[in-house]
Image (cartoon, rainbow, N blue to C red; front, side, top):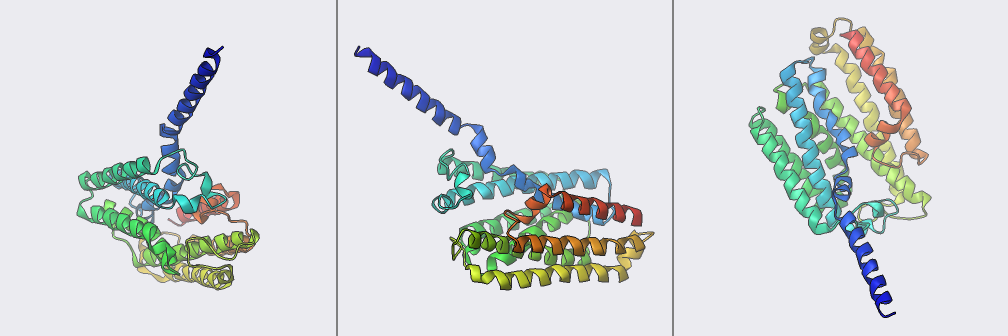
Length: 315
C-alpha cells in the first residue's frame, strides 16, 4: 500500500508540470503581446490613402511600417505588464492578463520584449524607407517606454502622450512611403486622437465610479475629474470637426478630388459618431480603449464604411 501514495504524488507532480508547461508555452506570450491592439497600427496606411498614392511600392512600405509598429508595440506591452504585474493583480480586468494571472513569468516577458523591439528596429533599418522611418520607430519606442515606466502616472501628461503616440503612427506611415504629410491631416489627426485619449480616461473614471472607487490606481486621477476631462474631450472632438470643415478650402481638395462636395457629407457622420462615442462614455458603456471598442461596434463600423464610400465618390 505504501506505493499508492507515492504513485498519487507522482501523478500530481506530472499534472502540475503539465500545467506549468502549458503556461510557459507560446499561447500566454502571444496573448500578452495583445495582437488585437495591432488594429491601431492600421493608421500607418492613412498617408497613402489620404494622398491617393495607391501604388505597389507605397502599399509594400506601409505594410512594412505596420509590421514594425506592431512588433514594437507588443514589445512595449510585454515590458509594461511585467513592470505593472502587482498593480494589475488588483484590477478587475487586468488581473486576467497572462503575467498578472501567473501564466507567463515577468522574466520571460522581458526577454520577449527585447526580441520584439530588436526585430522592429531591424526591420525599420533594413527596409527601403530609409533613416526617417527608423527614426520614427526609435522615437515611438522611447516615448512608449517613458510612458510605461513613468509618464502614465502624471496628470494630463499621459493623455497628451497617448495622442502623440497615435499621431506617430501616421508620421511613420508618411516616413515609410516618402509621402509628404499635409498640415490638415496632421492637425486633424492630433485633435481627434486627443479626444479619443481623453475619452479613454473618462471611460475609466466612469467605470471606477460604477465600482464605488474614488481614485484610479497608479494614475493621477480621481472620479471628480471625469467632468473636466469630458469637457476637454468633447471640445477636442469638435475642434477636429472644424479642422475637417476648413480643409474644404485648401488647395489639396481641388488637387485630389474631382467632386469635393461629397466630402461635405462626411461632416454630419463625423459629428454623429463623436457625439455618440462621448454619450456612451458618460453612460459607462465604453469599457476599453476607444479604437478597440470601435472595432466591435457595428454603428461605428457602418460610419467608417459610409465615410470611406463618400471619399471614393468625391475622388
